[in-house]
Image 1 (cartoon, protein in one colour):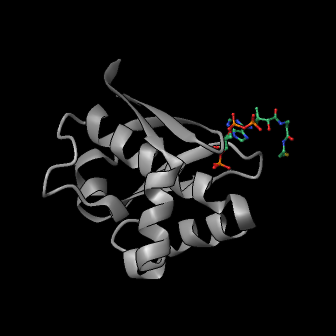
Image 2 (image 1 turned 90 degrees about the vertical axis):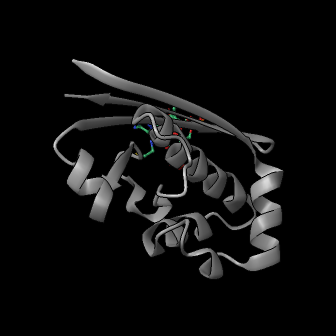
Length: 123
Ligand SMILES: CC(C)(COP(=O)(O)OP(=O)(O)OC[C@H]1O[C@@H](n2cnc3c(N)ncnc32)[C@H](O)[C@@H]1OP(=O)(O)O)[C@@H](O)C(=O)NCCC(=O)NCCS
């Protein structure tokens, strides 16, 4: 049974501005080291991948119904890619305790300008 869906679209320029201003590692409340390593591997196009991961976290927050409230732990909703490239959501800490028993599906797409993510949570 599907218990939640969420989607988000974000302008890559918004995330690029944040990253250029503060640097990825000083923003490590948002992205995990694994996510940062993955995004950095794309050189000039890395901002699209950062933006896509931000969108995935926000889409997840919609799927669980909280949105980006103060209690939403960005870093505890991490994106990892399987060998095929297929992205999955890996939950940690509070998010894992609350949502770890559900199956989460994620789809991502991005262009130079925008990134979009779609999340489905299934029981
Ligand atoms: C996967 C594919 C459809 C992505 O399309 P695209 O136009 O290049 O890029 P999009 O912006 O639409 O999507 C990119 C996202 O697709 C997702 N993706 C990649 N491979 C995927 C797969 N096998 N299944 C589901 N999603 C996948 C990733 O999340 C990626 O974003 P990320 O790298 O930031 O995580 C396309 O690259 C493709 O068909 N490739 C052929 C297979 C291939 O080359 N595989 C390489 C790994 S073996």
